[in-house]
Image 1 (cartoon, one colour):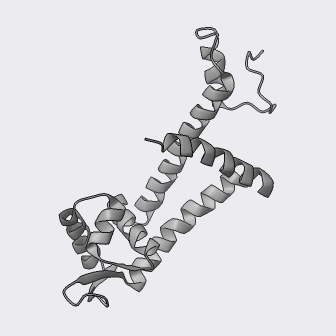
Image 2 (cartoon, one colour):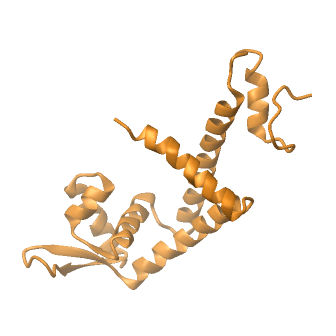
Image 3 (cartoon, one colour):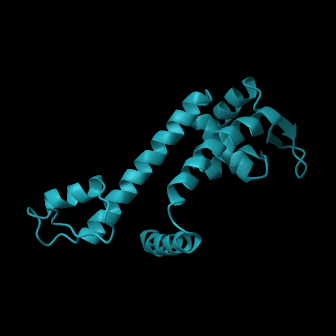
Length: 170
């Protein structure tokens, strides 16, 4: 018989984890431990899905991240903007852009706001590669959160926002 009495009758591996630790740490808050361990397992699961998707699409993670940053800016950005978004040195962005250029995923074009600047723009192939990887990841996210009704998903998002706001404080 389980020592952890969760609100759901089905048990997952986190329930076994809590059962194992409660005798060792009798003051363990099973709800806190359960929430944190489940978030860790979900993060690992989603990371593994992303790694499989990127491998299936022959897209290294750093290239995908650069495509993603570009897509988030409407498909076009200055290298300095990409460096800021990716939190990396501009020289490192240049190397990434060069690799994506060789693969036909981006092109360099003159800036429309500063004639001294060259922007990076996604090509159709770059958009397609990014969308293909995003679709599979999105499908898995929807599969997982599909066990919740829309109100539960909203509640979960709101609760996690509250926790993140605290985590993001200096």
